[in-house]
Amino acid sequence: QVQLVESGGGLVQAGGSLRLSCAASGRTFSTYAMGWFRQAPGKEREFVARITWSGGSTYYADSVKGRFTISRENAKNTMYLQMNSLKPDDTAVYYCAHRGAITTQYDSWGQGTQVTVSS
Image 1 (cartoon, rainbow, N blue to C red):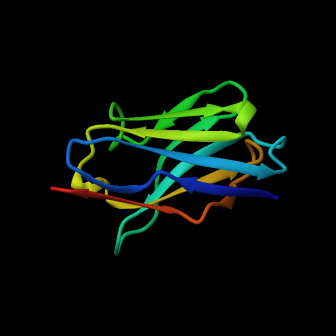
Image 2: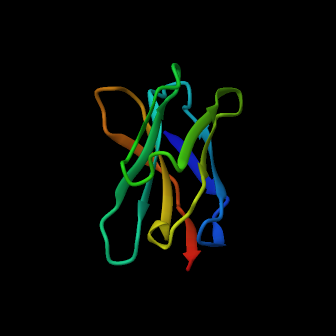
């Protein structure tokens, strides 16, 4: 099992920036990838970005491409999401998630961190 703890959320004005962090502990040696998801009020959870743990390959949702950057620090078992040019539509609870193998779904989730973008 992997435990995940997000931090870095907050209130920011439109056009501003935030950096989210996700610290992993436990069975982190069995990590294929980690990802960020978000859920806005009244909406389903949606994929934001993911990064493979060994090669650092990244993939983004179209809605955040060019504005958000996902990265990781393997030695610290930590993943980041740098969010620039934030929009009110980015307001949501952001969750990080762990994926143990390419053949599996995301199997561990953090508790979430609130991001609120004011207009």
